[in-house]
Image 1 (cartoon, rainbow, N blue to C red):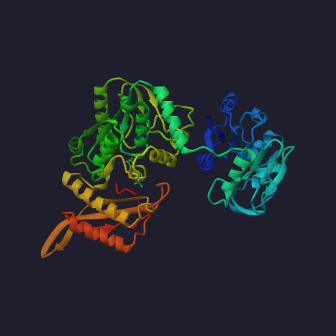
Image 2: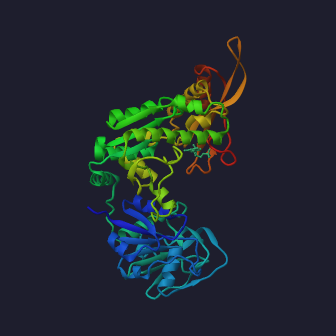
Length: 511
Ligand code: XMP
């Protein structure tokens, strides 16, 4: 069965991915495509509707992105958002007014709720406006359906042709009920049925991979992270033992993590998994290295060397599996060039791996969808919903030089912290939390004895994008319990401190 599809023409706006996600949240499959996609390709995809995104350009600029005009003759409903509305206007014979000042912010928009686009809305709504130019004269056949104080034509429709334009952004969360504008477009105007679901997608993907790969051999570098895990399990459901996974365990994972990964893949999914335990090799390379960037470089390079050595043993494979996900594809040029994800968990793609083709089974999925696929496939939730963990692992959470003893101290302290956060049911609200072994020793007293031992720092942040974040206000009782358990249960730690710095100015990791 072919899915209903909404095509999203990308004019370079910052919210483009968000529009695609919102559409999928309404159970309608969406794809982001370049604004200059050919008419033949559009016809081939047979979309139920098309959305023009916003974008930073002005329609007056020579180089401004323009779609093929034929798109308006296909008989397919179109919704133009912001720049998309302005482009629709000038292409269909209306006029756009050049402005020098930008209107930005949540703005009161008066709407005509007789329009199908605004069915169920009251006549005043708060939507996010973010534009400079605006529509001065509507194209023929269009009527006005929205206005603001500064922008008389904030919405327009050509009911007969099912063309709609809005100057505001319904996709962002600060636009009240914005999602209902999208729903009205999908269900009332494009007549979508909304039956797209992750579960049907999983079956389709397995079937597709079966046909594509058949009896050939595939190789996957497994890091234990969400993307590579889900990609590997999907592949194994499709081709079974024809898939080999290489799991390079550098020994810098959290307590028991390596065994857990091995357990899931070998026991639960019966995947052909080669685990390479090479802690000693990595620790040797890291001996006396204190510079964080040097640590990262060494680990990344060594990872590749190990992967190469092991893949050489396997010989030529037909496919190399990559856990590329949709944001990687969109950000790096919309599939115009075939993008090979530089596997940031392992530090780059091996120079030498003898394969014929790359297969990226998650290429069209957002992170939250990848997680849903993971759950659907039966991968344990603690793996699917695990917090981000840096590729260089605990090496960048041990300040200064790394030794096996320090590694063990940190693993224990970190494990206690994670356990107590879970016990306090804070594991869903705090986005990243971990222990750091500082390089600081200080004086303490235990029983009657003086101690001179390490200080462990606890770090916990709340963030959505990990680019900025605030330190988490963990209740004192929880911190107290963690601190007391760590100093009592972990040898060579006599002091615990809590990091109360947000990002910026600090980073999330200490190195
Ligand atoms: P910072 O410390 O830059 O971290 O605030 C932001 C996010 O990136 C993760 N991080 C890394 N991930 N390799 C990775 O795969 C790295 O070298 C690395 N350094 C930081 C960090 O855990 C946080 O989620």
